Each structure stands twice: as structure tokens, then as C-alpha cells.
Image (cartoon, rainbow, N blue to C red):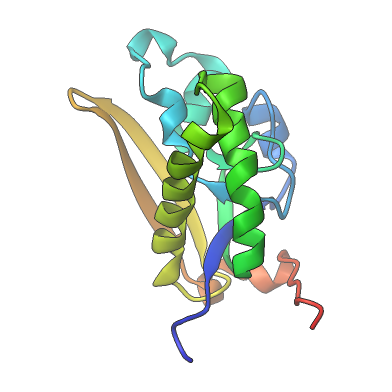
Length: 164
């Protein structure tokens, strides 16, 4: 059924610059979400050096919990998504103080659903960037797309097909 395939974003590196830009760089190909929750209590005083770069333009990898500047829209299987939910929920427990994994599962699901929604209207291979700024209401994020033909992503992307 056209339009029913699930899509998520995976980390794309064109060079080694992310290793110098962020404290922890996401691994090429790992699934990513905006991860703006990390900055929910930040102020202008927090926006220095590599932390500022992560805030300004970093996607959050769901394996390393590192940051990456570019992500590419990619097909994902429902089973893969189901595996990401508990991992992200555990991250909320370990890093953000969620009381237990069961309490964090719903929020983890919402974060993944949000990213699936962002990716859903874009062709596979579309590159996405994020930019953030602090505003009176909190964190404002904006997404930019680079269509596959303009991105030349076929030169860089690893296309995985499920084993069926």
C-alpha cells in the first residue's frame, strides 16, 4: 500500500567534522530523533562551545546518544521501532531521572512517533537538518530538507534491505 511504509532518519556523515563539533558524535547509520528534550531547561548561559553546537544543529542518535548534523530519511520496519522504544525509555531513566522504564515508555514512543511524522512526508534519501533557538516559551526547532537529487545522497548512504 503506497504511503504506508514507515520511515525514520539515520545519521549521515559527509566527512569527519561531527567528531570535532560534538562531545559525542553519533555513529553513521544509527537511527536519530531531534532530541530537543535534552535542552528543555537550558538558558543562554548553557550555550557555549560544543554544547552550543549540539543545541543549535544536532540530531540525537538512538544507539550512542551522540549528535549528528545531517540525517537521511530511510525505511524502517515496525519491529525495529519497537526495539528502539525501550532503549530510549531506559535512556530517560538513566540520564533524565524518569522513575522507571515503564513510566518512560510512553514518552519514548511519543518521541519516535514525532520523528516518524517528520520523515513520513519525505522521499527516502531526503536529508534533514535541524536548527534550534531559545525563545521565551522554551526551545524552538525548525527543520530543513534537502531533496535526494540535490543532496547526491546515493554517494554516501548505505541502503539496507530487510532479510525476508
